[in-house]
Length: 459
Image 1 (tube, helix red, strand yellow):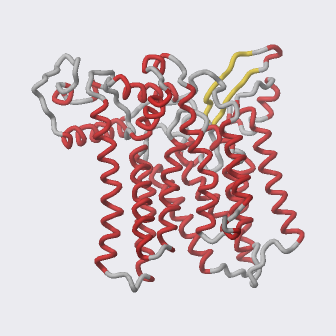
Image 2 (tube, one colour; image 1 turned 90 degrees about the vertical axis):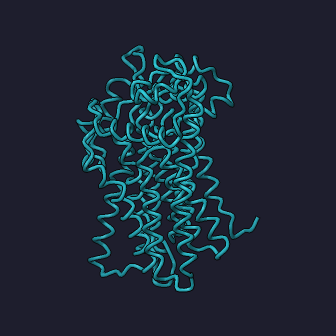
Image 3 (cartoon, helix red, strand yellow; image 1 turned 120 degrees about the vertical axis):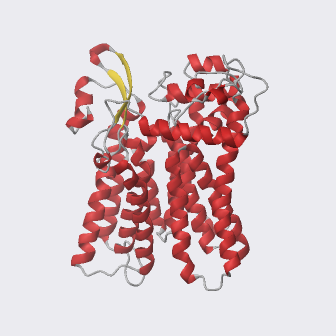
């Protein structure tokens, strides 16, 4: 292996990510939060009964593929816990850690600060929780951020390899959109970066540029259409999702009261009808939830989500799982950003052009993922903020990557800087460990639980 490409800290990050995401993965052996929906949706692909969900099908199709490989019976998946399906989000959660390391390196971070950024992802309790259950957001984050990383690779690739990386970025963005519509922001970000890059690409011909645009438009569209084609092919029978569809659509489902074997509805008609109904359901969703939260509470994690409650044991000890981020990370990121901006301003520190570009990417991605939720009226949750949270983290790391670097390019040369760097690693580690019982469902006494409810809104 080329020594220049050998990064032992990356191996440490991957191993630590595997440990935190996989340790005791099948505990609790119970249905946690929205696992009840996604395991059942995946089961329907195996028994062929039509279902309806407000999100595109790819995440559930991936779970169904894993279930098929594991030999799980659809009936057992619907009535049981199907905890072995947690492998899919767990692997996605593991890969997210080195992926953020790679993005930071591509944006210009040194190995020390890329390690710090990846450690912030590794030691965040909320991201860890989300990656340990049969939920969609870990795979969504992996595909969305993967698209950004692949495009950053395309920016520095040679003319021929650029097509490959650009195609892979488009493929990953298409996968993100096909898991949840919020994944569309990955493609939007790539599109904005592509436009930003054009003035500096004087050697690129217009046919080539138009070809790249075609790749960025065509491949995600093809992925999205293909996912729905598979969806319809695997669900030919009547199921609990029939009522959401038009009578004409229902007439194509075997076993439906209106089934007509002579009805042949074109794929594009089914596709349009289902997407219209998904949009309508998203817009008219009136359900409430005691752990729902508004967008303006997310940056400081004002309202976590209570995922699971265990049985009460002797002494009142009880296991609980919360989608609750590590405050040392969530709050520390904002402290780092504010402190860094003030330090740069008061010290008249001019940031490097490459740093300014990286900060612009992170800030654009943050608001691109955050602002659309301002107009959403339906119930929302803290996990809707994950993309923006990660980009706030990237912003903070890239800012201090510059501020900790001398004009000669040397970094962390002063003892105080190294002490602060080490203290941050220790602080986020202690924060993760302290809140770990709420991540893994370890039994706590009532007093122990209360000691971790730092805000009244967390209960």
